[in-house]
Length: 233
Image (cartoon, rainbow, N blue to C red):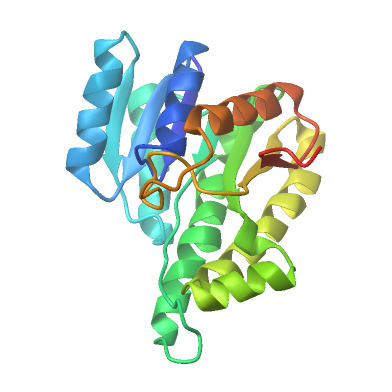
């Protein structure tokens, strides 16, 4: 039986490239998003190239829905080997005026949903010790940096920056907890605009395939919890 990767928060850039990179390595692919049309179309494209793929619809900020999703994927593909968490919500852009419910939704997608997915998939991940992983798409807004804080305040990313900062810490603590069990947890922080993403608008400088390749290298190396694209070397 092939290993399975679950792409949570599927879109046309990073997560699509990551799905294709792991598919080339022989993985079955489960694509998850709110839009049935989007994931079904992408799954058909992957299936047309010989990949076993299927789309799933889920609100990734709803813990109960996330737990049900993991059960659906397991029923369709068998045990889960890799979770890729690419989901993000962008509410509460201005924390001085936004409804606090928007902040809760943004946090739930970044943190609560991810924790729910890890807990639900943990029996499978433990069974796949040495091959199992949780891979998270991070963002520079997470960093405690005055320039990043100014950008978040200026461009309506305050809620996302708070959620991403919490997610960054979550990755590190999960890495420390699960690494001894042979389950790798890591994040690739994208330090710029990805070509073909919703943020591109002709300003993209990073190829999604480079991010996907960094995820795959991180998965194989299984050591460093935090990586960046472009690298800071």
